[in-house]
Image 1 (cartoon, rainbow, N blue to C red):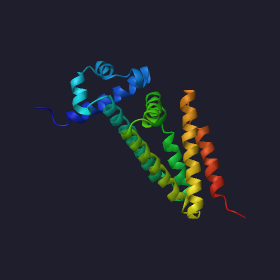
Image 2 (tube, rainbow, N blue to C red):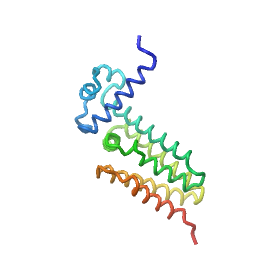
Image 3 (cartoon, one colour):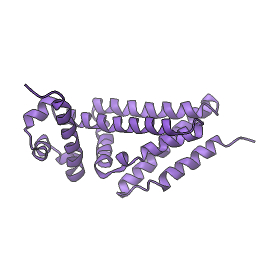
Length: 194
């Protein structure tokens, strides 16, 4: 009989190994066999928990997305109550150390690419996009009209993704300059109109 909690420990271990495998060899070469070899387990165990490679990638991305959502919640809670501070908290969560380390960055890039071809991953990407937009829009709406808030939220979401992508592709994201650019955009959008 398995020990209580062992399933969660095993799932976390396999997801961590998947992140490292994608980091080292890329998604194409990350097979169930390569993951199980690194995890010192059998392919049967991975198949039991995830079904196949797609299921493993989906579970890994759910883990990464959960980390992002938790970082956003944590930073928003610690921020001052004004919209500008809340928006900055969302920006900083996207450049959190958990989101810009090598294994996670490469997994995000693989996820974005695969989400164009796989419905389950496309659904996860859609949820992430909608959640970010909704979060940004709600905060911009506190100071802007609804149409202006929607435009500002769209622009900030694109800026966050673009800055993050450039940082990921460079291999060394600038976690100070990139958020600063997003902050400048927030300030511009929330600047009182004459």
